[in-house]
Length: 124
Image (cartoon, rainbow, N blue to C red; front, side, top):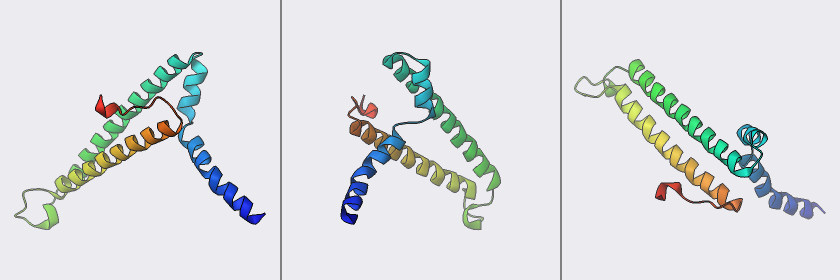
């Protein structure tokens, strides 16, 4: 009996993860506001675009703060032409780029799991 419960738990884990990744406030609101599926999908697409713009604005503001708060030469060596903020902001932006790529790949994977007509928009 104990083995059966463990096996069922392992088999149900992907379903639980799928439910968390494919639902949310935005999804619920768009489908409540729009009676037909294409309109709801357009609503979700607009929400995604708005969210992306907010994220990009936040990243831009963060880079400004990083540079403003780290004005010393990199590694406190006067001969360096870059400030600590310059180096920090470059590394921060590289990390953000990697995270966005990861996020896009994960979203594509989830769409595939949902058996949606998923496509890689970066290849269009």
